[in-house]
Length: 314
Length: 99
Picture (cartoon, one colour):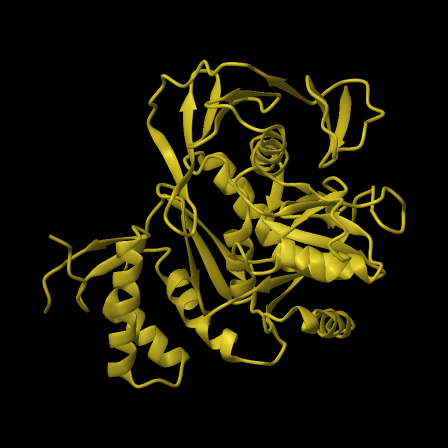
């Protein structure tokens, strides 16, 4: 079966229920699922170790023969070929299907995009009449909730947690991911009424998967011009502040905000680092980036959206 | 032991980096470590100057001429920034004997 995921034509041995089918004829990325883990005995030299905010190990990355090994420490290994054309899932222990889908769609494929020469930001995005507006920030800052608030207001959805960017005719375009996003239970209840139809994202989180209808007014299928990025900040100072604050960032601050949110598979790959550096420099020259802080109260989300819509006129 | 930067030191940007001029400010990427570093307008001026080997004194004089700043404070801030750039392996330092 062929799917359209982040504008890539992807084949998968297992159904990807959240991802639209593709009209393409040839897969750019082939996804295979194994029953056992052929790499579990490997203890390679990890060049990157990601931890969860509580310090628990999450994902280790290493270069191995023919590609990269991505080890989600508790759950599974993924092998990604050097070319980024092949992805192989191998369970480290019995893993629920929804967890496999989440790791694949939302964690592995964004890194594959980077390996294949593309760029993606850790950001959620929606489409406005002025262009695509994205929200970046650390885990738990409210990226998905804010995007969900705009979806509730009727703005077409673009992506959740991974925004692929592409340069075309010297402009930057935002590439739709797939029509679904992920919310904490309380946010889902506030925004969409907690109707109980939403599926679990993964067995280790209480987040829920919210699907978006594939209609032009709810999900933007085609790449759209990228207009603005809001970098959400949370600190003791912003927590105490009861105001919605939007601040224009300097080019340097904008660049560093982009760097913080960019997906990078191999930080030891100099050509990739140099390519991404140049790309993000061009993004800064074309896209306006703002810092956003707002009180953590669901009832204020419509006001946050309103402030952003007003700011977009500037 | 870490190399101490003095006003007589000669400093130059390492080759193992790429940098971007961002409307007068700058960002640098250390290609060896993958670490990024941002510089404000004054820092970017210093960065431009040290694309060629220069003494700290020479850089300080250039900054005092360009900005309305107390020379002693400027020297202190300059040394602090250079120490930071050195700790991130973005500059090379040669110490020469003072006059």
